[in-house]
Every structure is written in structure tokens, then in C-alpha cells.
Image 1 (tube, rainbow, N blue to C red):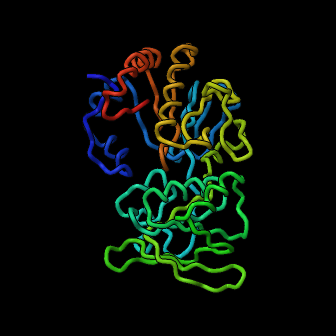
Image 2 (tube, rainbow, N blue to C red; image 1 turned 60 degrees about the vertical axis):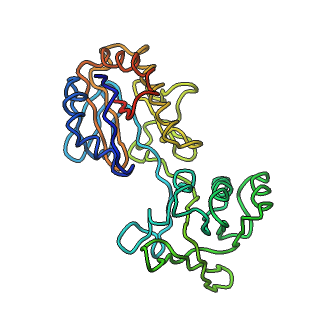
Image 3 (spheres, one colour; image 1 turned 90 degrees about the vertical axis):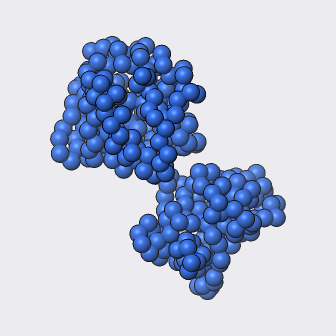
Length: 321
């Protein structure tokens, strides 16, 4: 059976990765069967000054001739009452940071929704949500948007979008029945008046923060902290260090585009890197934790992955390692 194929897993997406690592299929037919060792650790820093590179985790130091940085980017959130993911918060129960990911969910359909932000992302998300919500509020703490003129025009001309200027959310509260978001307390930053806004969904659109602080300036980053890669490749400013996924993509940040850069990475490694460079290939960070993958037969495995990746449309779940 193909290394890239795993049985269908009907699991909610937040728990999918844990489910993949728990399944006996993965351990018996994928990583272990391929002479690979998978260990999950939290990395604290790296040393890319010379080969072999070193990655320092909470319990060990791993050396590698090549490193893939795939640490992603985390959506920024605001810390007001009810915004968290604890028992008293409504994160994932009406509050989200990705309208494109979650906006079409049944709990948001034909319901009043709100977006926090004033840039292009906020304009895009608000416009997208008009396809599903009954009305959309944009809450912005200033009296002008930062977004481009064309995006502003698109939003301000949409009859389903209303803007609440000079305001900030100070509290989110529940609906009382289903323990989901029921509304917001919105404070006018000029008059300090607090008003009530009944909504069933709130979306943060205030930007993303790439997980690159642990790199400590050892790779070239852009002004927003994303890893800079050479156009059309996954190569970074340090030879032998590659980047894939949202950590180097501040425009799209979608699972499908992240998977695409993963394929680019495999193709370039298989064709350009010598086997001696690939004795230890590490994949850094998936979500909040770090996966370190040490390949003992790297070149052979990469060639196998590359040849079988063409069957992607017939694969239920792909684990690119």
C-alpha cells in the first residue's frame, strides 16, 4: 500500500493530526516501515551558522544537514472577556479568526456577524461573510480604514455591511441556550459609551504573526516577519534550510497552498540535493508542537514520494514527510 495513503479519518479537523499519529496504520506502514523516526518536541532555538545544523528542543538537541521550517503563522486575537477558548470563552463557539475557513458553517448562516479590523483582510472577510450572514458589522477603532481605496469602496457600497467606527469590543457573551456566542459589548473609544450588539459570529481580521521568533534572525525575514524564499523555490537565505507553508506565505495562508509548497520542496530536494545532505531531514513545527523527522533512507524515500504524489486526487489523507 502506498506510503502516502491512509484510511479515511472522520475526525474534526482540530484533532486530525493527533488522530493520525495515534493510528496504528501510520506507525506500522509509514514512518516506522520507512526506517524513519518521528518525535514530537517543542523547539526553543536553532543554530544555522554551520553544518550540521542544530535544533534545540525542550529535551534534546538534534543535528541535521538540511532543515525544513514549516512553523506556520498564527492569527492575531484580542484579549477581551469571553474571547478565549476556556470554559468562559467563545473561541470556536462563535469566535474565529478565519472567515474563509469557518464562515459557511451552519451556526453562522442567516445570522448577524461581526468582523474586527480595518485593513484589506477585514474588507475581504466582511465581503465574503455577506454570502452567508444576514448582515455583517465591521468594528473598527478608528474613523478611517487602512484598506486600499478599492476594497473600501467595495465594502461601503454593500448594503449588507455596516461599519461601527471608533469602537472596540470589550466583552463577548453567550446566547444562554447552546453556550455559543450571543452578542458583544462594544465601547466607543471617543465617548466611552458601551452598547450591545447581537451577533452569532465574530471574526478577527487583524493580521497574522508568523512563528519565526525562534529563528533569532538567522534567516532573512520580510518586514512582517515571514521567511523570505527565493522566487519559485522553497530555498531560504541559508543553503540547506528550506521553508514551506504559511511561514513563508503571508498572502494566501490556506491548507492547499501550504501543501503545494510542500510538493515544491519535495521536488527540489529530490532533484537538487545530494544524499549526503539528506542524512537527517527535519520537519519543524506543525501547529503548536514540533515534529522532527529523521530520515535514514532519504533520497530513496523522496523519489518514491515524488513519483506517487501524482495520484493525489485519489488519496484520502496525505502526510507529507
